[in-house]
Picture 1 (cartoon, rainbow over the protein chains, first blue to last red):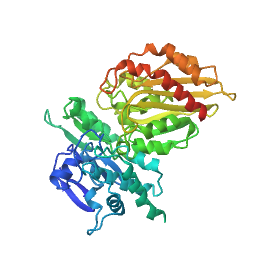
Picture 2: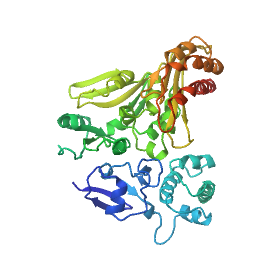
Picture 3: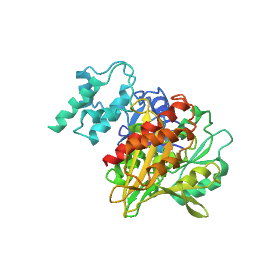
Picture 4: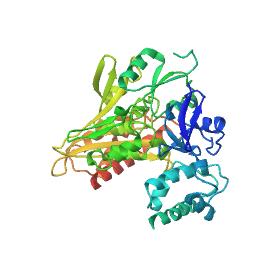
Length: 154
Length: 288
């Protein structure tokens, strides 16, 4: 049975079986390859997307569960060639290395900043606790998040 | 019904619809909500070939209500929703902490209370010991009606339940006549996003002078199923909260546990850390 849901603002129809992990539908059926499949156990966070405003690991979400819901992937953040404030800040802080974990980090942090516009350093670290990076430390990433939050506080 | 070896998926529109669908699907029926446990079935060597009945969008299962006498938690409430709802409820501090610190934020947003209680193979579940320590009960519904049983009883029978049953509510009783406090201490090997190797959940009722009138101590993740620790309950009752005394009592009584070996920790280590965790949980209760 077709599964209808919104992806990055557009209604999409999946013909995959309902127990198919959402990340496979996004990557293989819709060619949205931003969300990455790494651990497939919900530990690494590289497949994180936003479902109805909340970060969720798309490797453990059956596509049947997102019927009528709204999914945002990392591809939604840049609009008309303009990066989001968080993306710009990551670039300015030179926080990105291999990029495998980053789409998931961006989605966790984008949803986090929506709910916590004035975060502490500890808040940011807690929000990132489900996103594992094996290239680098997290300090520049946290710096970039706090820097991106500053204009919101102004 | 799916052919053998093939999964099916039905989205239930209400509790009665879900119960009916589960009944029709018999032994092959299985409720799915957040899906974080079911989706990992293949990693545990279990085929994902059941007749799944989704209860994720049933609104009445997604409510938390608080009154003077009880907290009623819908089985479809997520961990993050529960942590938020109980953030300023001192008797349920331990449960709020458990809900707000298990797994990681993205899992907590979708994994449900009911799923945590029904995941029989998940020894490191946080909510189960926290709810047990609070004397929680569950409303178990079937087509013939509802039964309210203790959570401890539910854990005993959850593997042998007849098809067509569903946990709908979890009820935490509150006693306003005495000061209730609770705390939940977990020890993951990494600070973030890891399974705890051991858990201690404690709920106490205190007299006006601070003497423990009633204590419930539950140990999770050490053995395959969480269970109460009667020796520690006896050691705490009738005394003021004292972490040093608790540690000494726990050292004397810890050998009644047989730790489970796992990839993250050997069984002996899980038992060895219990006195330290017992001390920490009493310190937390003292500070509340």
